Image 1: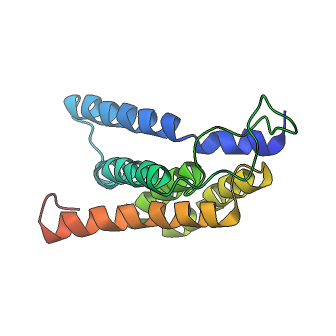
Image 2 (image 1 turned 90 degrees about the vertical axis):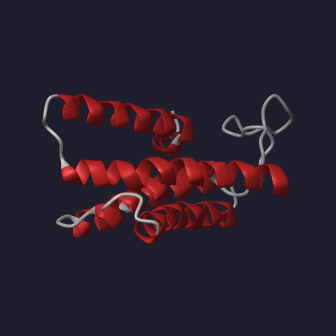
Image 3 (image 1 turned 90 degrees about the horizontal axis):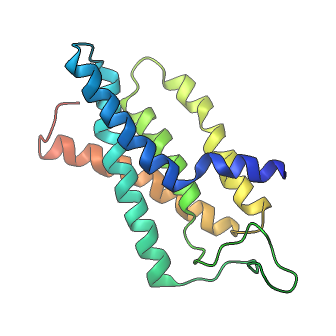
Length: 166
């Protein structure tokens, strides 16, 4: 197995969307037992909407801009086995990972340095997309920007409209 492919699997958007819903369920289960954690709650309040907003923007932009991938999907002549048949810009893998880590950074009070070091993971996932030939550099940069923008937007909305106290 290609090492870049193993790294790219860390950023699969469908996995993180489903996992975020599992985290919400776990929070409510913990809350039912009286074991709530304010940091975990803040993270969920920012991360879940951020992730879905970011993925909504990403898929909308892919459909609207319809920029083809820099690779040829299989089966085909000189095909790339990692290439999918959807559009390229922006990278949903980069969007997902940067939305997750930016959400953690925003709500983290004690561990900001750890989260900053953790940004190596979204950077590696983004690099893996380029190394596998399924995205151009601009695709992952666009995805990273959307992924960082969504949590900031959610935080702004929470504070501006006093939706929840963070």
